[in-house]
Length: 388
Ligand code: CMC
Image 1 (cartoon, rainbow, N blue to C red):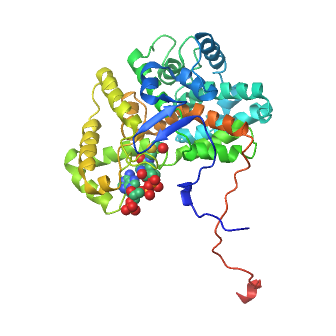
Image 2: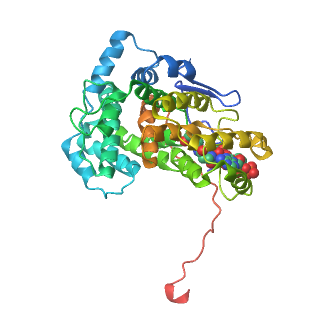
Image 3: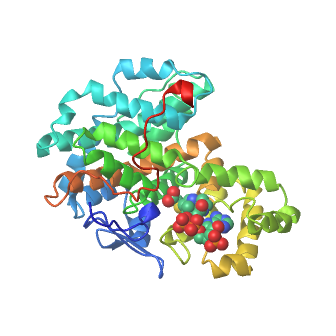
């Protein structure tokens, strides 16, 4: 067929029309359905933001009560999903466990493949948002060799998640309200980010009209990578490796020489401070009031200061992104680094599902199938093996 536009990484290709999330990367603006992220982080709850992303409008109190009720009543996992998770090695990465468990859900709910029925879509969307924290918590408990804690439907979404993670017995755990609030804010900040790598994966796989569990499992796979959601885990490892502020200058020289990247810096869209990083930086202070300061904070702050004054980063418009500080909060909340991307995945689930829903209800959409520029050989004669 005719000439294709060569655009690796789709830096200049719009794959869809979307009314969900607006970003102005030059000015550092992020809005969900037109509402600024700063207002949502401050005034809203995660489930309310889920409703907004999925439905386009903020819920009335009745709508929010119904939605909260529906999500809360789907938090339990089928016992065989639990058995499936038990089968992983003790050191299995929780993102791998999460990806597999979400794809396995498609076999537990085969009716999910009927994607043309809006009520059925609502049911599957509700289930997925409800079950992600349970899967994340079970993956964590598995890695710790601890028994699973079932959901407590008396608790809020985030308090329930913390309880499934950290409760040791029936009576001993009540999460600090300030920590619950911090987690809520982090989930809100991660809830959607328009056509990022994982949303694009969900849309690309979803465009084959597969069920939403399979499409979201693909998104989880994309998020797992270190250049996407895996960056928050990589930032903590990097800070720990740097070890002290004295080592920052030589580390920066290595980055400038191209030996490695400064993880948590740079963004395809933001050529200015990532607005989510500003909010996280503030939340970090709130969390550290409860937990005490993480010594890595000093290294992160100094690293940021030096990078923001350095010609290499300035000329390339590399600023801290959402992942630069999020790992520090997650660590203060006592999550091990391999759980960080799982937290991102839980927060991003409503975004994936809103993108998926928009895709399957968009009459202009087609199966995703990019072109290529072929650079290989042509029309060669087959050579029998004994003549090669
Ligand atoms: N450290 C050092 N140099 C960098 C970095 C970095 N973190 N990011 C970009 N650059 C340089 C890059 O080497 C290139 O330089 P040159 O023009 O001399 O070749 C220039 O900046 C442009 O980079 P690019 O790779 O063309 O930019 P991109 O839009 O393809 O990549 C990115 C965006 C986020 C993958 C990249 O900035 C990166 O790898 N950052 C580190 C990983 C990270 O923090 N990822 C989290 C992103 S935010 C959360 C999420 O969406 O998951």
